[in-house]
Image (cartoon, rainbow, N blue to C red):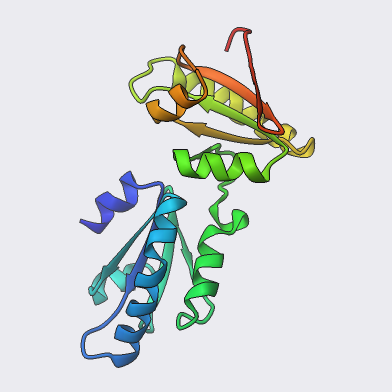
Length: 188
């Protein structure tokens, strides 16, 4: 079950714990306090008590937190009892970012990025778009270069986000400069 979640979920935080462990229970309570905030950033959080599976991810001590970004594991090495530092670590751009891949965001994350980023390129697409995979591969080739100019690049497939910004055609590339949208009208 966890394997399928790791494959299907872009951002997944997995809390490995053991039974009859008071510190594990206390940490779990703290993690539950930040679960809603994680949802805002598109991070799904689950708990699991499976020593064999933990061993597969090189976990030797419990409790432990592993952050999967598109299936790539990253072990939290800080203080699990400090839920604020856990949240900070989970939402840190350096931990969320995957090399050579444009980040998928949800509508709430897009709003936050528009508030924080002066320059943002957003690729709006449909899940069932036959050409989108090829277009994304091309965009990923220029993503690193865009970073050099301070332009963040994300992708979103939520129809409500497209309608919020009056995007009628999909796929579309929109460049936001200080929240002002400019629709790319060339050939994607």
